[in-house]
Image (cartoon, rainbow, N blue to C red; front, side, top):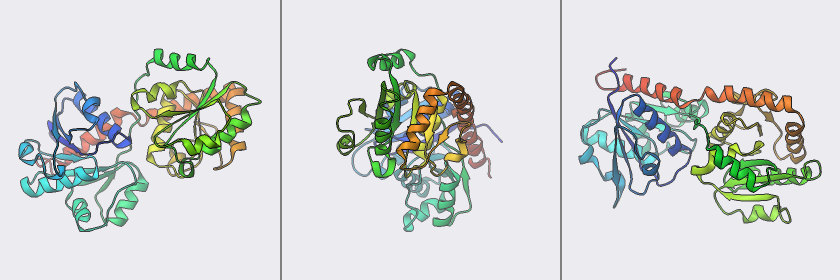
Length: 357
């Protein structure tokens, strides 16, 4: 099969979450492989900032009206394959295929997608491939969309070293105290922040220096009521530009979620990659990467005492902590950007018109 020379990506969202992070990682690694690329995106997309200066990348920023109907003439048949990274992008790709006959594939990196309705069923039907980030997502697609061409390519950790100067600044700002933290939207029902708050309350006596970071989006006022009178609980706005440094500054990364997904799983792997020991609850996909007592600690949901005991064991047992850190890093390396990019590269080769699958 021939090498992949060029590919167009389409992502029309305006946010920056796990899906966009994965898109950025893929485009950067494909650029290192010498692939000429175009990104078709919303003019207000933060992807533009995160991909500034990437070699061989052309940006087509769309604005005005319904973006699904924009840019088709400019792109034409310049690229032999289109990779759709979100739902609107998939709809754009389907229309582009109808107009110009350019094949496309769709990536589904979270379980939140709509496979019902004639249009969405057509999107999946006409796609050359549908790529899912996990077996659970793939199974849902196969059942709901009645497909047999689904492929699994796992999401990637962010990788790369954090800015150690910024990490030191964060720790210094809190007097180098014992810092635990969770990264999740401020929703206790789904992400169990109240469990960690109660654990920190329990740990105030055995670990007087404990501080808890809650890093997320949304309104933290309800959670702040749970932490009333606790000056050692801090609610921080999620900013991906500094997230790796914030995680690296933690002594323990905690994910006590009730309804976790691929987003939370990747944050756990990012923490492992940064050398931070992990305590989590059991949710879909966790045990694929977290072996209790080996690469992390798994505690029951909604159990502040068990969570507090796990955190305390990591503070008081250096050999356990070192074992989790070493094994966690090994586990995270299995989800490197290089592996993810090469899997997509090999898939592109089978899908290109000159290389029929």
